[in-house]
Amino acid sequence: MLKIEGLNSHYGRSHIIQGIDLSAAPGEVIGIFGRNGVGKTTLLKTIAGWVKPSSGTIRLGDVSLAGLEPDRITRSGVGLVPEDRRIFPGLTVEENLTLGLMQVRGRSASAGRAVISEIYDRFPRLRERRHQLGTTLSGGEQQMLAMARVLVGEPQLVLVDEPSEGLAPMIVAEVFAIVRELKERGAMVLLVEQNVHEALAVTDRFVVIERGRIVLTGEAEDAKDRERLMEALAV
Amino acid sequence: MNALDYLQFVLAPQVVNGLALGVAVVLVALGLTIIFGLLDVINMSHGEFYAVGAYLALALGAAHIDFWLLIVLVPVLMLPLGMVTERLLIRPVFNTKDRHVTTLLVTFGLALIAEDVLKLIFGPNTQRPPTPIPGASEIFGIILPNYRLFLIAIGAVIVAGVAFVVYRTRLGAMVRAAAYDRNMAASLGVPVSLVYSGTFAFGVALAGLAGVLLAPIYSIFPTMGRDFILLAFTVVIVGGMGSIWGAVVAGLLLTQVQALASLVISPVWTDPIVFGTMVAFLVFRPQGLFGRLGHA
View 1 (cartoon, each protein chain N blue to C red):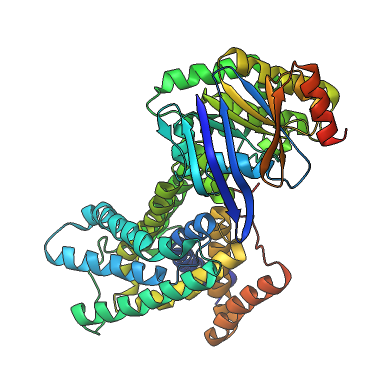
View 2: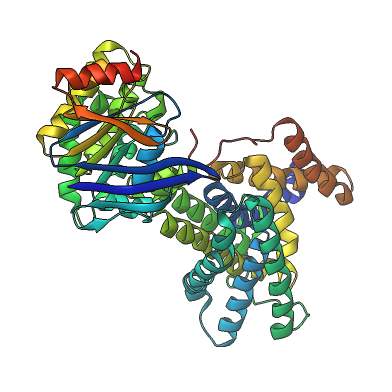
């Protein structure tokens, strides 16, 4: 269970996240929508620990995440697929993936290898290219790698930021299929996405953010809520 | 003197001596470039850590600890010194806006203090430990000091060992990932703070190891760090700040240039050539010969 209450965060003097409350249950995908620059990415970065919250609480199960270092937050069960994928250029595909094993403490080497092998079965292109540098992959493959290296850690909460940006429709479908798989595994997903129509197909609930505040919440299946969402985003 | 004699008695010994000096410089530059590559910190006290390593070896050697044991013991003793330095001096200013200037000045201050502390404890005079491997060997008719041959060999082993750890192990992948993108590495669970202090300490331990290995050739005195650090900085700049292979190639090349140039022109001119190369690189190719640690 994720529970965020009264969350505020700043970039210097700019007050970006202004009192956000949000909760998620296991197996729930929440779409986070809004125009550019309203604080969607900052919300994910604050949960992941890249931006320190100025006030408020973030609880994942029994663990309080607010103020912890990003590596501690990760080891508490949070995975991040950032907006620009952030593949390490000096590392091969396999090194990028095996680094993902660090998300879980105390896993044996053989268990780690088994997880990587499962990931390769799920993403055969990554197996084919495992000795290549990560940044030599195509945009779609890099997105797969960014998601795969988080899956290696089997997180309870996955933060996914603009995963379909700049990708071909076929790859976008694959990205959302992975989100669906995460949901089926019981993970919570916070999905920031500009591609609202596609995203609604995998989300259970959504929130709309404006100037750092949640201005609308709704159920993805509810026709009226969807109508209000489209009005809010003027799509 | 005919061409063969020139080759045997002048050129070849000069090349081997240049190679020994090159290995020495690479050993000092290795820690410097790793620290720069990962932490983006220009460690002005690196030369003094090299001196501390040499003095530690001198003190422990006086207590009858064998040289071969010192090669392991001194770097191990330098590790906590590096960790404490990183925690107390680097970390508090690491996230400030003027990190480059602040860490440069802090480590420069540490260098000045360390130099004086060494002077207070060991005195200002030069000391020369006995050569651990005396004598010379004749290879293809060329007489070469045994210890310099050993230094070349162990230098190659150390460089290969460091490169293996950095480029072929998960620990190395963590270091390279953290060097490139601290936040993303942390979000994959890499304990970045520990990696930072561990790597700083590792760089310091390498400087200490260089101190143990080079003292029998270049002697020990409180300002010994200054001599090598200038050349080591040049090597790091020419090779590419943060590049291990860059440090190796630039270290070996520049010292060969120094060694061979002194055969044809006055040795007074070798320093201007080497430092002129550094200036030329800073102006025309500031990224150096190779890319930075963690970058493709």
